[in-house]
Image (tube, rainbow, N blue to C red):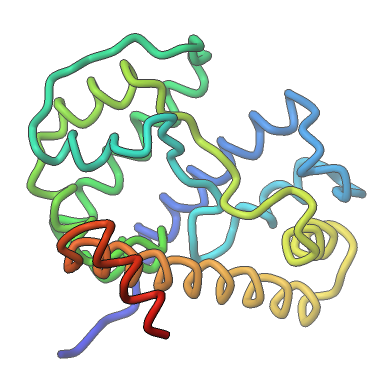
Length: 208
């Protein structure tokens, strides 16, 4: 199977989504940007211009995606009300990933670290249903790496205070970490689907 590099237009959309997320962090004085120095506007642009989404859509309910893909309509009010900026970010991200997964699932996987199965199910779920449930159930954009992770802090610092070579190294370290984490999550999910029961999982662990 031949894979092609993501299209420039898709890369531009990722950068724009990242920038909107970072502007919200900046306005809230989030500690994730404590290492940002120099020209803040230019540094945010540099930090956003990477080949992956720096945030994920966090669901308070761990079973959210499974029930959403199954067509559930249990629209439960979120425990906390999301801001207008957060709801806009969630809706924009879902719309982008939904269209991208239908056209180029490989690019969607690269940008998000998600499994091929997740992208397939996202593409097959009506977009209106995705957005309605996501907003009603409290999905929020959240940084994919911890704000104190040295790899994230290095990427923030080099966006404003490092040379191009240092910045490239920092970006690739974060990208690699996110891809590995996504692959591990996909394997864990596949293993969970293959297992017949929690008892079987325990028995397998005991035999090791």
